[in-house]
Amino acid sequence: MNPGQLSFAALLAGMLVRWREVVTVALATVFVALVLSLVLPPSYRTLASFVTTDAGVQLPRGLGDLAMQPGIGGLASQLGLGVTKDPSESPAFYVALLNSRELLTRLVVSRFPDPRSEAPGDSADLVELFHIRSNDRARAVEIAIKRLRRKLRANADLRTSLVTLQVDARWPSLSADIANRAIALVSMFNREQRLSRARARRAFLESRVTDALRELRSAEDSQRLFYERNRQWQSSPTLLVEERRARRQVETANDLYLTLRREFESARVDEVNTTPVITVVDEAVPPRRRQWPQRTLLLLTAALLGTVLGVLWGAARELLTHWARLNPQEAGTLRHSAARVRGEVGGLFRRRRGRRNATPRAEPPA
Image (tube, rainbow, N blue to C red; front, side):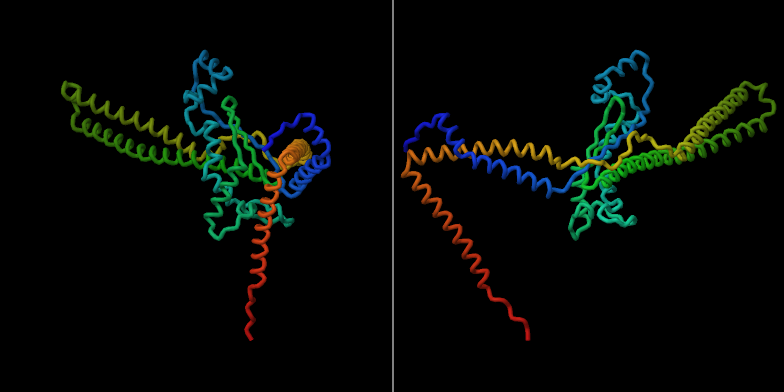
C-alpha cells in the first residue's frame, strides 16, 4: 500500500473544489437545528426568593463585627460554627427542604390551573401536566418527582439568608405557580413545625404546673397543720427548726409553681402565634420570554458547527480520494466489500417485508 503524502496546499485545493459539499453539510446542520428549535417544547424559567428569620445568639461586639466580615461568616457556617440557635432556621435547611421528597410529593399532587385549557376552572396535577402515562399511581408520582427535581433548583446565600428558587416549565404560568406553591408549602411546613413544638411544650408545662400546684398545696397543708398543732413553737428550738423547714418547703414550691406558670402562659401564646417565619422578597411571576430554545443562539451555534463539519467532510473526502488514487487495488476491494454489505442488508429488509406481506389474514366469521 502506498500511503503517499498530501501537501496542505493540495488538501486545501481539494476542499475548495468540493465547496458545494461543504456548504451542503453546513446548511443541513443549520436546517436540523431549525427543525429542532421548532419541534422541541419551549421552557420558561421563573425566579422567586424569600428571606429566612435567623434567630441568632448575641455575640460580643468584637466577635459580632468579625463574623460580619466577608467570607468569615460563610466559613463559620460551613464549619458548623454559625450563630443560629436552631439549625432548622438556616438557609441551607430550606434548600434541603425544597429538594426533599416530602415537599416534592406535595408539589406533584397539588392542583394547578391547567394551561392547556381555556376554561378558568380546569386544573391538573403535575403528573398530568408532565404527560406521564402509568396505571400505577405511585410509580407515576415517582417519575414526576424525578422530573420536577431536574426542573427545580434552590440556592442559598449564607450571608444574607436569602433563598432563591428557580423553576423551569413548559408554560410560563405553570412555572410561576410551581414556585409560589413551593414557597407556600415551605411556609406551611414552618407553621406546622412551630405549632407542633409549641403544642408539645405547652402540654408538658401544663402537666408540670398541675404537679407543682399539687406540691404547693401539700406543702401549705403541712405548714397549716404544723401551726395548728404547735401554738407555742417559738419557745422550742426543735419546733423552730421544723417551722423554718416547712416554710422553706412552701417558698420553694411557690417559686417553682410561679416559674412554671409563667412558662406555661408563654407556651400558650407561642401556640397561637401563626406568624410565618419566612418573608417573600420576590414573588414568582410568569416570564414573558422563554429560556429554551433560544433560536438565534441555536442557529448561530449550528452554523459554526456546520461549517466545521463541512470542512472536515471536505478534508476527509479529499484524503480518501487521494488514497484511492494511489492505491487503486485496495480501493476497489473496499468498494466491493461495501457494495456487498449494502446488498446483504438490503436483501434482509426485503425478505422481512416479503414475509410480512405474505402472512395470511384471518377470515372474518360468517
